[in-house]
Structure formats: C-alpha cells, structure tokens
Amino acid sequence: MFKSIRGTKDILPSEQKYWKYFKTNAFDLASIFGFKRIDTPTFESTDLFLRGIGLDTDIVTKETYSFTDRGENNITLQPEGTASVCRSYIENGMFNQPQPIKLYYFTSIFRYERPQSGRLREHHQFGIETIGSHDPELDAEIISFAWTLLKKIGLTNINLSINSIGDITDRKQFITELSQYYKNSGWAKNNCSDCIERISTNPLRILDCKNSNCKNYIKNSPNMISFLSEKNLKHFENVKKYLELAKINYQINNNLVRGLDYYTHTVFEIISDKDKRQNAMVGGGRYNGLIEKIGGNETPGVGFGMGVERVINEIINNKIKLPQKENNSILFTYLTNSSKSKAIEFNIIARKNNIESELAISSRSLKANMRYANNLKFSTIVIIGDPDEKLNYITYKELNTGDQKDINEKELIDLMTNAKFN
Image (cartoon, rainbow, N blue to C red; front, top):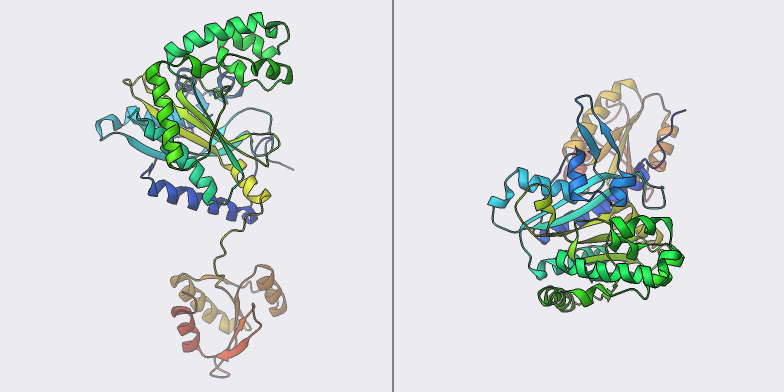
C-alpha cells in the first residue's frame, strides 16, 4: 500500500474548514491593508536561493530539495517565498510602478528537515512583502499586519519579539566583538558542532543556537543594538514608536537574528505562549540588499512568512470556535425510476440557486439514504414520489427539526428560490 512521503500530509475534508477560515481572514486583511496577490512558480533556479538566501545558511546547506532537470538546469523547490517574489519584482519591471509595491502570497514550501508538529517537509506559507521603501513605518506595518491577523483569528496568547541587526557596517563591527567574546569567554571550548562551523561562515547565527550549553554563553554575549549607527538606531526607535502607537506589545530580543542572510535592520518573530517548543508562527524583517544580490538595483524591502500549519495547530489547540454558516443543503431521493427524472430536474434547479445539493444513489434504499443524509448533516431531504399518483407527491423533511410535509412541485421550487435557502 502506498503512503504519503515522510514529512508530507493530506489535508482531509474534515480539516478544510480551518484552512478556509485562515485563508478568508488572511486574504481579506491583505486587501484591507492594500496588498495585491502574487503567485510565483513552485520551483526556481537554484542560483536564486544560493545568491539570495546565502550559501552558508542551514536552508541552503542542509534543507533544500534541489535537482538537475532533463535540460541540465539546476532547480530548487521553493524553500521560502521572499526570493521568488523579489525575482518577479525585477523580471516584471515592478520598479517602474509607483513605489512601494505591496504583495501577498500563499504557497507550498519545501525543506528537507526533521518533520515536527506544524513544520513538515512540504508545508504552507502565507507571506506579505513591501518593496521599494526604507520607511520604518512600513516595518511597523508589516509587524502590525501579522499581529492583527493572529488576533483576528482568535489567538490571544501571543508574544512579539523584535531586534535590529543594522546594516553591513554595523554588523562588521559587531561580528568582530562577538568573535572575540566567543574565543575569550570559553564558549569556543564548550560549543556545539553547529557553532564551530557558524563562527567562521555565519557568526551571527551562533546567537540563534538552541544548544543548552551555548545558550548559557549567549546570555552574556555582546548586544547588537549597541553597535548600530545613529541613523540605524533612529530607524529602529521609529519602528518601536509606531508599534507603540498601534498599541502592539513587544519585547526586545538582542539575540534574534533570523536564519536567512538577506535580513538587515528590523527582524521579528511572533510565538504562542502555549507552544512549549517556542517555535515561531511568524518571522520576518527588512531585507534591503536582497534585490541587488539577485540582479536588481539597490531596492529596500520588508516582509514576513507565516507558517500556516503552525497557526492552524494553534487554532485547534486553543479550541477557537469557527463561525458557523447556516447549513442549507438538500439530498434529493426518489421512490421509483419514473420519479428519478424529476429528482434530477430539482437538483439542477437547487444548484442554479446556489443551494448545496446532491442526488441520492439509486442503489441505496430510502432508509439508507436517510441515514446518509443524517451522517453528512444535510439540512433537508426531499423524497420524490410518483407524480401520477397525487398532486402533493413530494415529501419535504427538515432533518434538524424533524418537521415534514407533503408539497407539490410549485411549492418546492418556491422554497428553493425564495429566502428559505438564500
């Protein structure tokens, strides 16, 4: 028997209500905030991610699904959404439009990592990107969007962490100081295998280490904000001011750096209080050098990615009550072959009037069809008798109440076309 590949998951009909709830709220809010939808291909040139995300990031070195196609092209399944959106921004000349460009996406993401709750090898990401402005108000707007969305869908116990990692000049000075601390504090002699590699390839990432021993050293490590230039510190102070104006609570996390090389200035994460693993549901920040890295002009940008499976897990774990749409649905069944044509006709009329309806299978008995209607929670069952026997040959039964009556053809059509079902 075939099974889904490890790290992938079917989204079953019984789970679709949560996905619909999330998408409806996310897409509606994106429209309110002035974002337009973009869809990019599921796979891209491998070089896009090597240049954009960074050669030494865990995603590129350990987690990408990459292959050579039959045309000898190096291809990678999307490991994140931002690089593809930025590639589209350049390729389609969006820089010629009024700036900034505000885009949102919903896509599958592929990472070869250890499957865990809310993070599969194929998972889904909702993201927004604002490209073409360095205004700190836009950093705050991106964060505000993520915060507002999570609150809107009912997640109240969430925490926002922010930091600034400055620009290349700031980080160069900071990395020198961090490297000295790493060597002099004893960390270098008591570190993990990842930090041994990262200190030479991507020193900032040692601050993101989850190893318990490394965490003890991280607590006393240098503070990135102390190395920000006056201009970059002012940018961060303005981001904080705008968040405070929006009444969004935050905490400064001096060790927050994010795992992608393209980040500059503001970075942030939102986690749930109830997640013992403290995995971020949302992460993002500013990426002012990314578009230039992948072949565009120097162009600032800011955005986030939201792990949809993690958010849906939180919706379920928090027992958030989804809005209930009134169930108006009909199962049409019939007693004889001669009345089947009438049942087909009425089923067509129902669907034309946007009523969820279904034609019963002829091989089932009336009792079996009644059981089927109850199991699938139809609101109504309509039993078509013989139109030659009597005028009121249709039995109309509301399954929610048990009320039942015999009606004629005109009365049934009136019920389907008036406010009863619309």
